[in-house]
Length: 225
Ligand SMILES: Nc1ncnc2c1ncn2[C@@H]1O[C@H](COP(=O)(O)OP(=O)(O)OP(=O)(O)O)[C@@H](O)[C@H]1O
Ligand SMILES: [Mg+2]
Image (cartoon, rainbow, N blue to C red; front, top):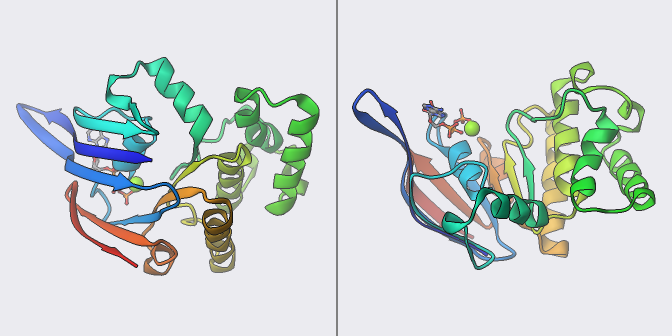
């Protein structure tokens, strides 16, 4: 489904290249559930953003669903993203001016799902995440954990083939976090959704079938179950 070959991302600091992702090669098959771990600043979010085509590497080859992403134009990348990817952001990235309901609905509008169907799908998500009572509130009126749930609902609503999740349970209590991990497991096992998550939690990482450890922008180690 996904192949990164010698991907690097650096920032110029003075005359030096400061590598955040340093020559990473990674293949992910359809149906895998991969966990990315590593200390703060090791490049996890940058790598996930590159995989999600939201950030551009300086070097390397990137293939996604057999398309050479490194050769595509911005517009083509955006189209691929909308068609295949659901993204749970570390910092939520909800749209401040939209209500909870509207935030969750947005990906369906991109996919041209018609109004009545959208309504039913959003209602189902609100219900599933137990946030029906919050649907008319704006993100600023929610707790961090509630915003995170809205972010997860938005990532899942358009039934992505690839789910990218950056610390999806970072602001949830342990029970909520476990429920989200069980939901991810079910999506992966039953619906065949490919998942790549970033996590600081060993326990959450073990929901995956492969754990990749990053250190200073490189793959330090990886293990498969
Ligand atoms: N625009 C930028 N300019 C310079 N350096 C940047 C920029 N964006 C990110 N970095 C650096 O890239 C490094 C990796 O950042 P990244 O967000 O990928 O880390 P992370 O592993 O996700 O950390 P965390 O666990 O804290 O979320 C950091 O040292 C950060 O300072
Ligand atoms: Mg991060």
